[in-house]
Length: 351
Ligand SMILES: [Ca+2]
Image (cartoon, rainbow, N blue to C red; front, side, top):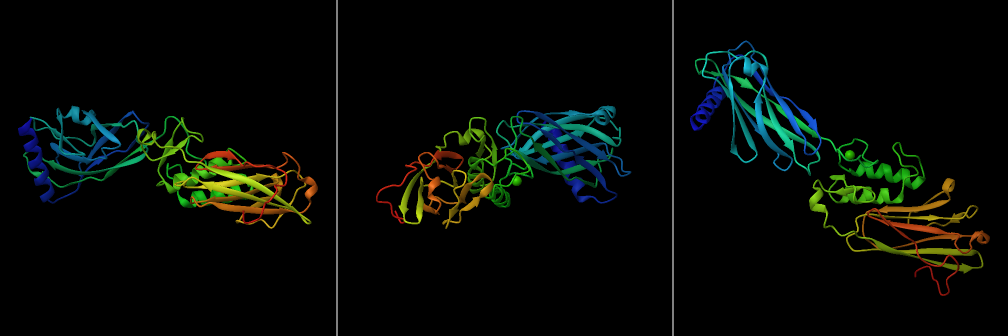
């Protein structure tokens, strides 16, 4: 085997130095789910040159792909060639195609490189290649190769509905669009609708955690940041608290919600659902009232700063026990806004 590798290395160097009409040795792309083994065809286009042997070095991402045994395909078999596979460097697979014969290879698929997609891989993986070729006398033939891509699909779940380009990356533009739709109560082009508050804070936290995320059936909503399922298991969920107080005065009520996220929370938001007919005024904290669902929405705030969110209600006849329901959501985890729905003694707007 050692002499074969030496031969291929020499062929590779000769080919790199030689000039002439271009021969193409192209690695094909493939797609599959984690734990699948995918076939990447190696296609030879001779460009009119005689090619008796060739080599192809494939640089791959070891965190996403593991090489399996390559196989000859029709044109390699027809020319009576053999295939070798070696690893000159970590993350580099070298395939060699040669034969103890003078039979030239014809155009077409000569071999298939095979990779197994790692269990925790997501997104896609780019493979860069370099190649070499020689004629039947061992002279170098100029050859070119390109790149290939292994697209990794999720076999277990869908992307987050905000991730409209389906790339398993939560970009800020996606969070912003999704957040705007949530805040105004608009219908989003992908279900569920209305947008659940935990989906928007989850989107915010996925963006802040580095954009990459994956489907995680053990989470609710079912996505977790990072590209590795195993690495994220130990992450403790962060939440926070939200407390409502209501002050009555001669004009009606002033309602305040004190929201305190735990340190390290990436994104949070608050929804306050008012009884029908109860129209809020003077909403502070950049909250937005959606009359259609009589809901005030604040956020998403992309930080872990505590905030006082306030609004006034002048038509106070609508405020009664259990008539206001609030939810605060921290990184996808929702908690009820606590506190008496009725006026609180000693309440002051600044808490
Ligand atoms: Ca995206």
